[in-house]
Length: 148
Image (cartoon, rainbow, N blue to C red):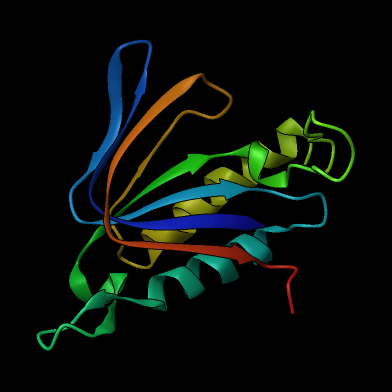
């Protein structure tokens, strides 16, 4: 799975004019399932994200995890993280998991994060969404479970 994490002071996702998910301080997590991913992949990624020390402690150092701060996660499906830009000017997205598999893994990832006592809000799979955020820091990280 691929994930783009953004530490935020607030974030929301809107579909057809209605806010369907919003959080205060925490992480906006854009997530993309790849064909080789499994439920175990989603669970391992959720655990890793819950433990990443991306939040400031009382001394101003990034020493605290999302779990330690009580922050929330806004999880949004983002198949474009699988973009192949190696040829021409039009990105290809055939490297992403097929929609049925991707939706199941996206939902499993969100449930896995929630099972770690992280408050989770989500977007809507395959919907045309507007995502708003205030990036804190800014702190933005790219994770790929297939990377060494």
